Length: 138
Image (cartoon, rainbow, N blue to C red; front, side):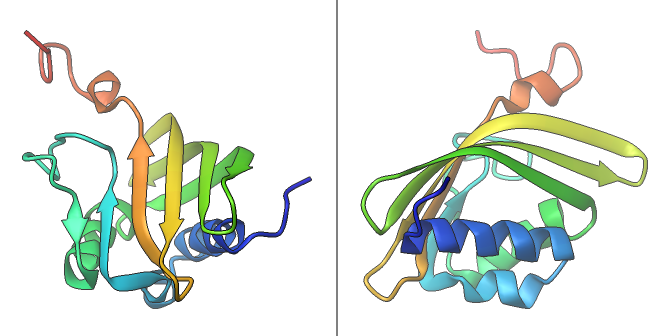
């Protein structure tokens, strides 16, 4: 059973709001200066791999990756590191109008002193979702 830490509560709220399609409640979990990396590194929606910093940019991430689809997030294990950090092993499924993607990932949430998400980092292999020949590392 999960320990009841601030970071675990933030993670649970994050997945609840994402699956409910509640953008405003999801964004309210983040600090004004938060950074979100999903996935870590470069991707088609973050070519430079810098992540999305600040609520306006995190809202753009929502509009690109969460809002247009029907997301299901299934946590398998949560690993708290004190009150303010949690690493989560989970599976994400998103259906974009008949195009379903499914990825296994590790996600870390780090909270600031006010209990808001300061950093969210999702580690998953985006290359596995790309057409053959795209995203090859030379």
